[in-house]
Image: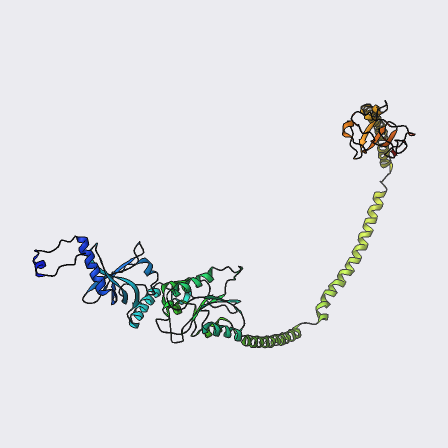
Length: 492
């Protein structure tokens, strides 16, 4: 492609080549990118309104004299350790390029960080004011720690000295079950991992395969403000605020502080101290129990002595037993004497009245009434006997008629005319000779009994079954009269 001429003739326009707008914009873009390439740019963020619907971010970097447009692509924005905020002074790293659509140059940011510790502290104070206004730091929303948790959940790095010190503290004070959710506590993506771990512990069920902890500890060793910045991110602060499990913050040393220290239910100066706060000390528990037992025994002894003293004092003020029952006994003796005299007088009065009434009594009405009742019972008994005899005679005639009908319809009457009933070994009736085979065992019923038989003929379908002569060589067993299946014979 032709370069832009820089001669006197070109300035005069006599021999200047002709460019399209796109060609000139492309040439400017390449010249700008080749001349600057990858740069670090310090400035204040201006006009930031959050990610666009496309996921890209557009804002400007400015100082007191100039302003440069900036863009952060969607893929880069998700990897940024520090998210842009309005008014934040930052150091941006990226490429200088142009946007031909509006004839402006811009920086495409690939990395972003606050411009020094002062900027971080300013951002930290801004976030602190924001969360305080939302009431996330209020003391009345913080929950008390359980006295004796069965399960303790820890969110920290699995490889650092922090987890070893905490486990050692648990073993020394009160051995308990510990669930570790391993996370990165520094660097890109660490804030998202810490927030996911806190929400993951809260999502567990109490009776699930992995039980829900009774208390959580978010722990990390000491470090600079930049090292601890993940625990100042909004995603972590809100995860701590939303936790329904009491949470202890143990990030950094005693002089360090982060935003989750203000939101957590308790803030421990060190991770080891957090382990001590989470569970009581076993030896102290035993000592306190012994003290309480001693206080209880002393209190019981004092209560018994006090009750005994009050009982003795009350007993001295009570009247004697003889004095209490003397007057009621006297009244009882007087009533006893009156009752004896009253019983004698009442008996004499009833005897006199009975003597006067007995003279007017006579047994004649009772005897007459009994006689009439006996005659009536005799008549009813005779009527009942005649009715019973008539009923029995009618039932006998009905039964005899049905017996005669049954006898005429039953197969026994057919047998008496010379026929026989053939059954197989299973007791089923044999209706056709074709259903028999040589060797089958049969039972033949006549009018006067039953005999057993065995099929010997080979051509069963054309044979006529009959019981052979007992003297024949084909008979297996002599025919016998029986009321059951006692006899055996042969058929064919």
